[in-house]
Figure 1 (cartoon, rainbow, N blue to C red):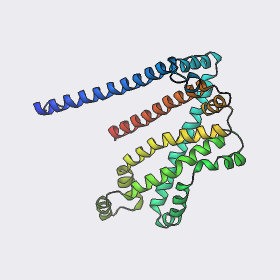
Figure 2: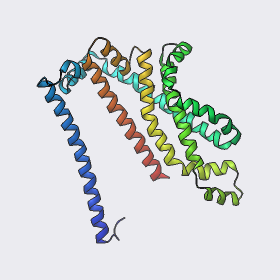
Figure 3: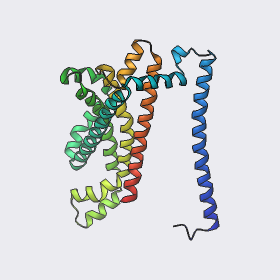
Figure 4: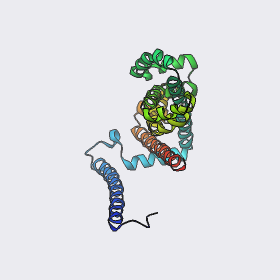
Length: 266
């Protein structure tokens, strides 16, 4: 691919790759430094390990949960609720954005409601969903969808509106109808915006599910965090938060890889 590169281009690419490796190494070193510092200050009692926990105590709690056989059930409960909430919020958001783009009247009617709903703290609706749907996974997933849906609609719809007008006029000059403009111009050009919406939804979905589990669940990482806080087992709280962080990061990188794969394929 690079057989015709000049010496300057090869040198530039070499420096670029070296810079990426340095940044990756610095990230790892920063994480190691934070963990080592945390462990050190708690062992020296500069910070109370009961209140702030420590990496070694988190590892022991993680092993205890594994030996008790409850670790994977809690992780799986939160994970499937998050994935379902993420997929529903994303798909519904994109569908609603398409409807708004196709119908200017619908867009004008719904625009003020979308603005109000976007400003509303959706988490406040959690108790209402519990009353309507019962204290179960349906209410938790609904909270997750509610948190991510409006953001997806607004972000994707804005991306549709920012499509290059010259491209739209070009296909119109060939007689393309509204549906053809959508499928041939608007959706392909808005792909980066939709991928950004997916990345944002990863965090939103985790927030919605954890808040839902705070309110009603008897299983899941959100439940462990609440339970750990109630019985002052802060090691359990920090372990759950750490597991959440890892899962959220893996899901984020998964979405990122999906975007790169689709871009390369199409």
